[in-house]
Length: 134
Image 1: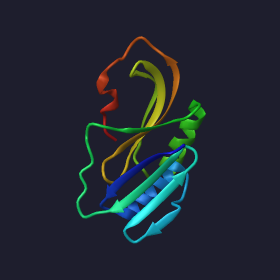
Image 2 (image 1 turned 60 degrees about the vertical axis):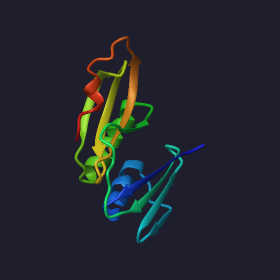
Image 3 (image 1 turned 90 degrees about the vertical axis):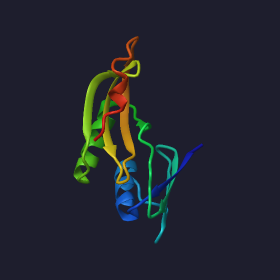
């Protein structure tokens, strides 16, 4: 099973570069106005449509769960090597869980986290923990 997303993008080349780094994968299909990623881990199909105007939502973010802090560290290294700005949170309580994560923002302003959960908690902490920007 895969989850499918379709995102508009103002800069297809920049978005292909971002998502190639995020997913550790190259797109399965690229056209002048379109790119398609088909990724098994995580199970995502992401279509990118080039458009003149893009208005991504500001009240949502997207996440990729990984098994360990080591996997988060690998993502930090990969995103940093690609020259992408990142924000790292280590063993922070957010959304009723103690987590380690790295945040990156795509060229159109969509925020992504790659994270692992160390333990569930009874505390939510500050609900704005998921609202910070990179």
